[in-house]
Image: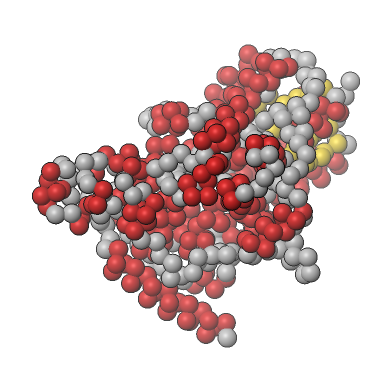
Length: 488
């Protein structure tokens, strides 16, 4: 019986997995994970993502053992290609199947791998498991150019049909000789987990990586969040968001599965809540569309005029205060502490935290992107870059330069009773609602009664919001005027 290798990447699930289905149809299957972060380049996982990867691989291996009596072969290598050739020889495989990835370094690698494998007489095929629509399939109908604005892009996706068929778990014949008992030691040898110190306690308490965890999270969202999503998605203190992003990022559930399950739960009715949730899946698709067609955006602005933006020298003290949630701006600090503890941050606070860094502190967006990349369990290159360039005003469909979030007003609107701030910034827990988003404005006696000692147990703001907003508006307006003159 022929042997196929299922090359596991960001497709850590058994259901709706085209590469696994193709491998199972071909013959006996070797599930193979190759850890070669050096060749991943800009897509190499950060610290929080490595923690998730460890536990997601363990969950997938346990599923394979329980269902088929097999496990995952692990290879640590500098590059995937020689590891695949060695594995094919070891297991006498004549075919290798995988699901596609879309970062520039991954595309270059996969093109070389596919050509070389085929030149060596091996069947080498790749599939789409990560997206509803691959980036080259949705283009402007007239010009066949890529989209740069979300709304027409998403309309084109909807017209193409987002309700798509999913694949069941295939009947799998495992190759002989793959010992499930050796998996744990091989996984541990990858050294993906933090040790000294072990900072992952909050991650462990928050998440269940793996395919089962993804479905648990989806069902919880359907039962608790979906019917309030249109409004509730903006409330960081409530549980109305799906929190599916890390599960989607690691391929523990596919967007096709999510769409089908939501449509089933809503009896096919796409009301305001469902439509808004689907549009968030659309933004994920849009990020990959932009990353594929404009690969330079990994580090450079989509709008080339912004490469000459006069960022001032980085204030390292301010940057560290922002990273650790010690800015003295409660909503931003709550978000950054949530990120540090759980590896995730509510989208409303992501926008406020990013705006403070890029606009009020005039810090290059790349600094924030790098920090998020290392601390987010859902770190996804396409979405991360899209979000940061949107905030900076230099990307696709970007926020205008004069849009600067006011975290005090945002907090008062979307966290009116301060529940979110009180959870993550307990130093302010006893402040009345009126002052919890601006403790510096509270009368001294109110702060004293609440045990808030600014400059001691909670910092004064590291920047004056009004003055820094005025400075940012002046800098951005002057730059825009020069850029338009240059273009003209």
